[in-house]
Image (cartoon, rainbow, N blue to C red):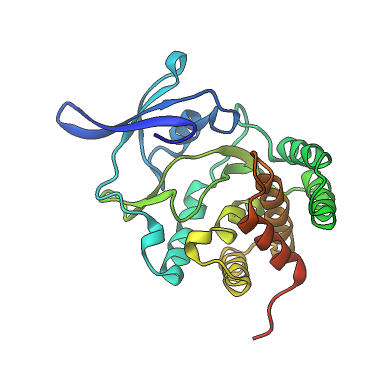
Length: 241
């Protein structure tokens, strides 16, 4: 059992599936809608959905091992191939990244720790929110433990927390993915490689990563130390080789 849902293996008509019952949670409110948009292209398939009980029946990825179990260079390559599959046209009902960014900025305004870092994150979020490119469907928690090995396709995304916004935001959870290596050099490597291979604006991607990472660092009772480190590394500049 996770913090926001109950997940269990099941069988339907002889087919292995996954039963997922969600607790009320804003970030996952439109998970079923996102999976329906993707239609199995890069993500597990949505087989059935009962909105009244927040219950989803999902394709079971077999063997289901996490992408974080492979070497980090290979994992980043997998994610670079996966992201464009997920960037489908998106609008209603998904929350807009710009609106979410402003909510993050407002929430950070009450923080009393890491003042300089928080101020930088707030400024980036407010600037980026209103200057975006074409909106697409985003998986805002796409990291090494939310992609699993499968048979239908080599790798499939799970557990989306969907938003509608520009592509540059899409690399943020990968850049900070501690499972793929947690050091300044590795964080910058992921940022540089993903933005180069996907033709993204590196500075906007860096700004989104700092903004969301700092916002999520304070999302709970304790400050996320690894998130704080990622943001500090990205604001401090690329390490000297």
